[in-house]
Image (cartoon, rainbow, N blue to C red; front, side, top):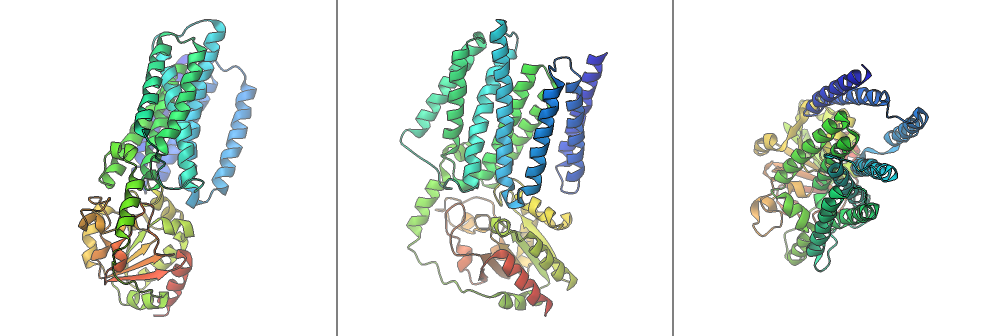
Length: 464
């Protein structure tokens, strides 16, 4: 009877996971989707605790208390600007948990001298391989996002060849261990090489590709969890891991399409290094003059506008300017000006980064407009306000066939009547290339901290 109730609870949990994931497809339904998924996880945890395999409830409860406390502290302390780093770490922790579960199964089997059968040996090696790669790869992604490492790719001679050789050795070890699952020495070698492989696979990827990397690592963590589910014979873990793995792969494909690049090019193209060389080569050419304007100058243009499109970027996140931006948008709406926010799929440092920041500032969901939907509106827009975005508004992607980002879909802000760009300096974006938008006749640069500029601009607009 208990087994039947446990499986029924797992089924309910799986259904809630699916409905929760569906809810995440829209900002309006995302809170409900999160709640449904959390409820599903509660069902899964309670069902697992009812299983007879639980050795010590005291240890489990202690783990829940410590983990819950750590999660609560992190949720309260981590700034929204650091959310990409947090997501990267959580991906790594998920991979580590799956690898440790598989490792514990190996130790247990070796101690009893009983070799696992069926799909379990294959699930063990896959969980260790994918989980270990996810752990160290996510730590490298965290280090890049936290600026503990440079944003440029790390390259060395024969890099791809050596990576391929290590990956091939890992595959061979997986096959051998699937046949001889009690060989602890080879298991340790596989775990060690997998950890190294995770580092080597991520260091050649430039910071501009971090949104894709985070999405892919999220998928890896799901696949590792799915494999761990087969190890534990836990259907809820298999289903939830499969959902995370599949959705992560779909999101990765969407992110690659948004940059007009293949996944292989992201993983093996060392994009940042190629961009840097091109930027240096083009840096000597005069692109035009940049005139710095003040928020007072900008307020004059805003006062006569009928429509405004705000384009948020990472600069807004760094300055924590989302609340000031919301205040400006409210002021413009009160004056009868139509205001929308243009969202590029890869703006920021993780998928949905701008959506999260604007949602935190209580910007209405119906004002957040995706790239394909809002691009036709720019030619009829009086003012486009760009906040710290660079690569996603770079017209070179549309006009310059020699540009490394040529063909990448962008927000076509340069087609607006007036373009205000808020930046700290003329330094290029994360992709490392200069933006011709800054030199166009209809572009006005306002230099300074985005939050301070937004507050001053809002004050000036109120006076007109």
